Length: 524
Image (cartoon, rainbow, N blue to C red):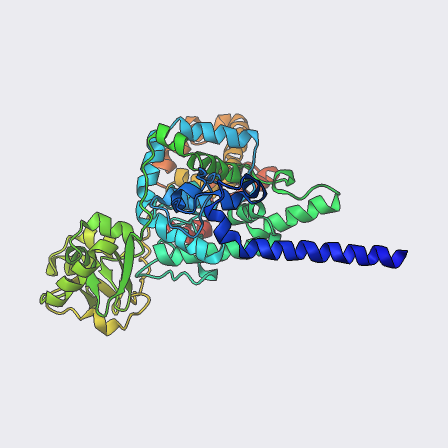
């Protein structure tokens, strides 16, 4: 019974397959007469369609909407035209939000004119600084640090003898190989001081691992910050910037930088304050000089005013640039400088060196070379009281008897021999001696009072000796006579007071030895 059912199922499947094959073979013929056979149209709708219809009629049109645009993002590989945008992209320091930051931000915003002047002064230097910061992978907030240090004045000089954009003191400058000699001071050099400052900041950041502490070290000293951290650690206190005990100047240092960052990070606020944009392109380039060259000559060859040239080359202490020195020229004037230098046939310097001979004085040397004595002293950084000996070398205008500067072989300074001033002996009055004696002057006054009392007693005992004897012992007259004669305090009168008053005579108003050492004259 089961075999029969299986055979029946096989027959049905085979029959259905044969029917499908037959229908497929007869499809072209049936398609032509589809209207005559409605059943075929129902079973195969595709056969009932008009075979002569165009492809356009057979396609279904669907409207495709544009894809949604993602939110705007910052492409750090693209170079913006505005340098401020480039700096904002590199801001990476942790923000400091405290009352001091708000105070200084308001302080700067209330002085937009000062901010604008500071931005204009930064224009020649800022691109180079940002370029150097990015090459070291440092946060670009560091480019604003010269605003806090020097207001971007390369000639800034502080009471602690810090100099330049980055305010290096002499010792730290020497530590980071900033040359400081008679000819130049690289603490004011734009390129050299920027490299040294960033090297220093990197060093102290690696020491502390925190940019706020690195900035505090830059202002206060890394040793002082280290000791403050150790004190807080010993007491179990936090060691971040705001928790350390530090001087007020350092306490206000980082908030000033943060306030400037808040202003320059806000384009709308910058526009409101009228702060100008700075183009994101190099402002200057450097070129080496083979021969000594005057500052005025270099400015003329670059076709630029002297003050603008000095603003780019502020490190030179003399009106002459030494040979083999890098000269900073605006990028758009570099070709002009090179072309004019090749065509130039005149001497590059109008200054030469002159060695003093025996017996010569600056008063006679200055008119010989057609220069005023004050100007000669200024050029050579000499004071009016100094006396130069034979063999000293001066920088003088070119003239007969002067030597070419190339003979100095880039010496760090001109050899100058200082002669001591001769000591002139002058008589010294009693009043001057008391003033020079300092505390001894008070003892002298006490001695005078005691001597006066002793003289009064003596005159009472010897009243019978006559009016002349009383007149000699009267206090005041003797002092006036001897003071007018320029003599010291009366010693004989003190001795006449008796043995009980001998100690008063020991307290001398001013010993002759001290007066001689003061250089104000010998003994009278």
